[in-house]
Amino acid sequence: MQDTWEALERECQQCRECSLCQTRKKMAFGAGNRRAEIMLVGEGPGANEDEQGIPFVGKAGQLLDDMLAIIGLDRSKVYIANIVKCRPPGNRDPLNVEQDACIGYLYRQIALLRPKIIVCLGRIAAMRLIDSKFRITKDHGVWFDVDGARLMAMYHPSALLRDESKKPETFDDLKALEREIQRICERTPVGWRTLAGKGRGPAN
Ligand code: URA
Image (cartoon, rainbow, N blue to C red; front, side, top):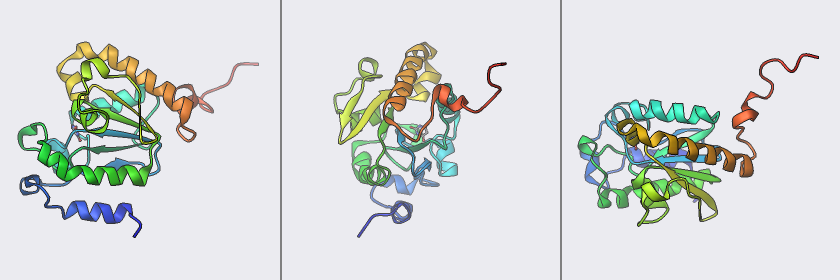
């Protein structure tokens, strides 16, 4: 039977495949545009996401919104999800068993969305989706072809909140993302194209 977003979300609501279900308040399924050409994948919900059931709504989420705005993106143009959908207690890294239990749901989201570009936010997502040996300090900003999509990782917004010195490199990664969107995405205006039709034209 053909998969649907609604069936998948219902399954995730009822999921008891790992012990995170015992401590979660709300499962954070995903947010944004289900027709987006670009998908962002983080690690797992934090306290705010656990309260609201929506990915990236805390401080890291605010920074993520600011990062997207630099290249003219917002949540209406992307889809955001995480490697695990329930909060690891104390915001620890999700364990391998928890990732293994949850990753199938993310693969189904990817299959439903069929994004042209997937941006991994941080090491955990990159190690899962790009390469288990991924080194975020060395490999961020590099493009990989995986199953017909273009994948790239950048520093997790929480890492940027902890260490501002990583921001210039992340700016470069965002500009690389902008160029790739301009090259391969047909329905996602970024950069100058978001300004088209706004403001006055040249005085005649
Ligand atoms: N960090 C993540 O990786 N995901 C969220 O949804 C929030 C914070």
